[in-house]
Image (cartoon, rainbow, N blue to C red):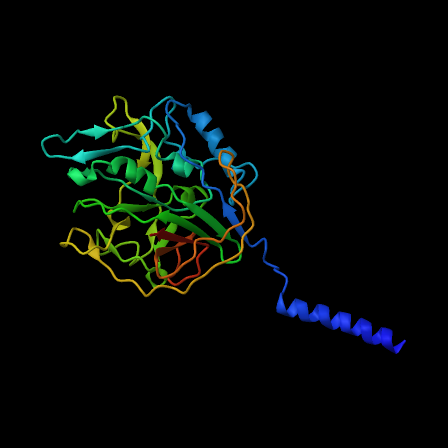
Length: 327
């Protein structure tokens, strides 16, 4: 009898020791992979077709809710049977040829990135022309690839979406920059955003001294019929261009129109186990993987989102968005 008791105790102790050394992962469902859906062609579709596409993707997103309807203030300006700004849309700047546009509307539509990726609350836009410089002759197609995220995850406990991009390209033109946009955030009720420099490691020059890193800014992004594409009758495209949301990565060059700001030292390496969850229907979900790790070789910006205007920039966010740029 004593031997049996000793044997059973040993088994219990062994099991307890294993559980201490290798604890069960109780947070296996805390982090979800987000499928990045590649841009699609929206040209000449009806507004109802586009809304149906949007609703189908939202139903598989982290923001899925019953009876979802696209926000009128964000998507209400879409007009049926019109062209859309192309993913490869850009134009070279040349004073002698100010209308030298390239690939204005053909192919995949630029703003389908937001429309069919509702789980990405914030994206990086490229709202301007490309420089008329020989070494940038392939810039149009290069920039379109840079503007599509590589991967993303959602951590429920931290209320944080992490989005990984390729390293941003050197634009080379003193008057151009990238813009932080939040079409999806606004559609889901987030009205204010702020770039937290204390958690950001990308050194950035903003176009104005009063910018998203110095004070909370209202989210005003929407899609409407505009004339930016210079096509007769206009095309559906994103708006609005806002100086306080525009930036350029710091580079060793002459000073430009973007006022310099400072950032902190890189954060320590962070990795987490994830489970694969398909949130789109045109790209298969990848196998379980690590999210975009933060280390000294990566740069990141950290954005806080609120549904109501916060009392201060340090207020706890309703949702956080970490965007990394991988070298």
